[in-house]
Image (cartoon, rainbow, N blue to C red):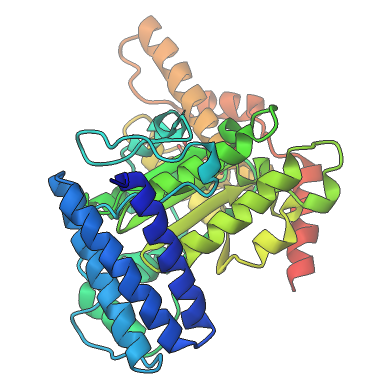
Length: 406
Ligand SMILES: Nc1ncnc2c1ncn2[C@@H]1O[C@H](COP(=O)(O)OP(=O)(O)OP(=O)(O)O)[C@@H](O)[C@H]1O
Ligand SMILES: [Mg+2]
């Protein structure tokens, strides 16, 4: 008898072939392939007794049924208001590896999720940083960016259906770019936690630091990438956040020194297309260097969002928040914010400054317990020592990039 894995491979081949026929508007051929894929899926369903997987097969079956209807209708979508479905923690059936000859998927864990592809344990790429408990309210400023994310992903079934009915496309590849320490990772963590709150945990958020994906041995980085994409596409809905995206997405033409760069970008492109074609998946990437990214990757970005250096007003707001209760009310935070803005302070630089004020205050308090807030002398002393980590070279390069977009 054929193994479940080999049947899954067949199912995916038929499903993919059907999609190709659909795109080519060859509906009779697509219908035939969908019928075959359905028959195989039924076989898999009968063989696999894992309840979570069986739920996922039912979802896949429903999706095949819809595709069949679509093909039968000559490609004309029949919009009904019960779609799209409510987000559920249901996993999709395991998909074959993009390089099946190299091994494919491992066995599902007790939670029904497959964590291993081609012998690569995906868990080691999933950063714990995603658990930082920040929400949008903790992110000072960035209102436009928050709105864009909300309108893309924090929608009720009705709102999603309406969006679909007016033919408004999803922006499911969003790039965050900006100078170091401006808050890209912080913002992404807030998105993760807001999403968990909004969906009741039904929409997982996976955070990957791209530097970790890179390995010197030939083929290793590509396999790591494939493993991550295979893992995430098991979920009916999820967000994949790739931090330090430039580590794997650099311009193929400018990377003669790194033999792994070209195959990695090619693998990324193939997998991104698969990911982006599913409106229920959101791909978020962050970089300090948008101008080094490969053009083919940039062309797939639906929304490029700058995370700028904080303005004087935002610096003041953040200072007020982060020094609350630790600063004498007579200290003019407005003028301090103006100095920090002139010195091009990032949020990370600001954090450092706040920390230095607090530790100065603590030292003073240890010497004299009556001192419980930092006064202007202390703050000015810290201000004298504080410096920004932002370099003129980085600022100029980013400005030039932004000019090139106009
Ligand atoms: N909008 C914000 N409001 C309040 N604090 C912020 C904000 N953005 C960033 N911070 C603070 O600044 C710190 C640094 O931000 P973060 O690590 O997200 O920067 P980054 O843009 O990812 O930097 P890098 O490019 O170096 O990775 C955060 O840990 C957080 O404490
Ligand atoms: Mg970061």
